[in-house]
Length: 189
Image (tube, rainbow, N blue to C red):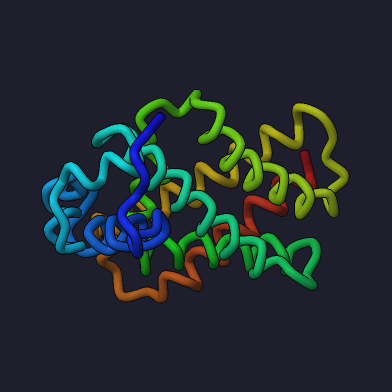
C-alpha cells in the first residue's frame, strides 16, 4: 500500500507545476529535484504520487495528451469537413506554440505502448477519424489519413519550434495552404 499524499498537494497541482517547468525550460529540466523545489517540498514527497521520474513523465505525458485532446475537441465543436480539419490543425499547432514542453511530453512517454498512454492518445485518433468522416474514409484508409495529418502537424510544429521558418510569411497562412492541399489530395485519391 502506498503512503498517503501530502494534504493539499494534489496530483493536478504537481502536473501543472511539471508542465510549467517543461514549457519554460524544456522536458530535460523536469526532474524530481526541480519539481520539488518549485512546489516547496522535499523530493521524496513526490513518491506519494508516482514511482520516480518515469512515473512522473508518464503522468505528465497523459496530462499533456489530455490537454491537447481538449484543445482539438473544442476547436472542432460545431464544425465539419474542411472547416473542422483546419480548426483542429490550428489548435494542434497553437498548443505546441503555447506549451512547447507539454507538447514534447506528448511525444516522449516513457513507454508509448503503455495502455494508459494508448488510451489517452486513442481519444485524439478517434476524434480525428470522426472529423474526417466528411471525406467518407473507412477502415485502414481513415487511419492512414490520420497518420498523414498528424505527420504534417507534427512536422510543422517541430520546424516552427526549432526556428525553421525564417521567411517573412504568415505561418498560419502556410499551415492553411498545406492542410487544404492535403485535403484536396485526399479527395482525389
